[in-house]
Length: 334
Image 1 (cartoon, helix red, strand yellow):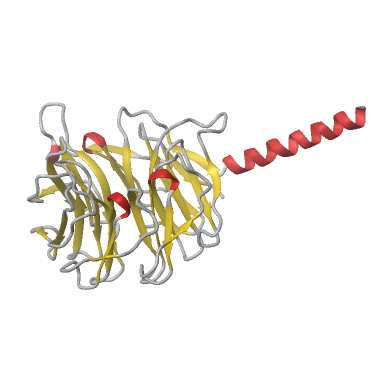
Image 2 (cartoon, rainbow, N blue to C red):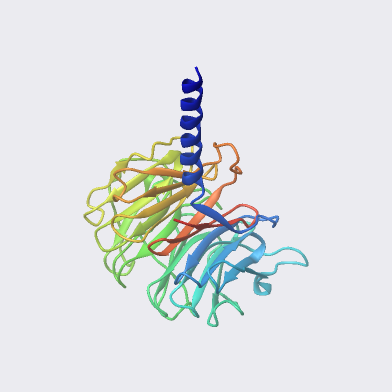
């Protein structure tokens, strides 16, 4: 009896150790002490990063998340206590970056910085709809996407934004509802957008024309990530992950093992290693290109707070940051 009891204690201890080792991989870089959601995060290296969210909020760090500065961008202040919400942020280096969002889901907002986020200037989007994703390939050429199938492009760093044709999502979108949710380019000419009802479109001419790519899901797609011209992933509603190894000629579903969660963010550091984040504090990790996905954090586990994680940035192997509700920032600790 005593042997059995001892064996049981050892087994329970091993199980507990395994659980702790799984969920100890993500430490708090910043407490969730804000009354807002942080929607997007971008790091240019292991130390320098930014995150944006509701009420014109911009978080920034220059020491790998040891300290985060909080700023409300005055240039998008609507009234005495109302600011535009920001949904996505992208930097090309430590100085030059852009963010996008909207004011009451009625006016597309774009802001830019040339000094690493100390000062932000508002740019004219020219569209009456929310902007959910923004991407720049260099200091001049960038794109933004949003509601009603909106795709904008600039060739002068955002001084002028021009709407692009043939950018419609599959759905007949109502005013203020999302059409496209994310965009990425791998060259100045080649890029992808993702959005509602499994929409994936590709361009090979900088956005002048867009071609729909067949996808094995009609779930809404929130985010896209390519590591080169051929290999990429898109994630979204209902735990869906789709992947391509031929530039989008074919997209196949990968088994996330989850079906209730909505995935909002994805990032890969190579063709093999990447992360996905979403509802219920979920963080998935793969080291084999998505053939298998491991749950590294989940709010369904006792002791883990139940928040929505909206985005993740992994600037290099063994370095990643995830952002969530209430200003919570998590740092990967392998």
